[in-house]
Image (cartoon, rainbow, N blue to C red; front, side, top):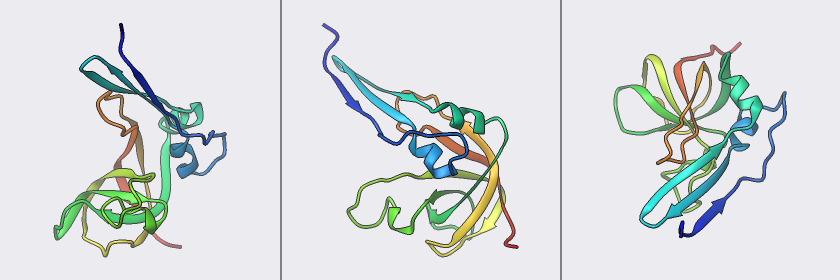
Length: 141
């Protein structure tokens, strides 16, 4: 017998023209347990896959991963209340960011806009579906 299968699915459907966070929220996850083996199957909405083929711009709030004077790796969340390390609200939508150049550390919750390349994460042992690489801050106009 293949074992039990647990399904976790987000109910948000992404459509062309949606904002970046709506596209990311449209990823569907299916957790599969077969005997002692575990994996997560991810279904990405076609507009998100298309977004990975062009520069991707997203605005959100800075969440540091570790305290450093200059950072190249951090998280971006759509709402400062979505901080995965704060409170007991669990982990909401987030985007791991890899900056093209080191940036001075910022106060947690700083609003920022970044442009980079959206990279699809096909690792079946993590719920992470995408990350933003070669990211650069977009100057405020």
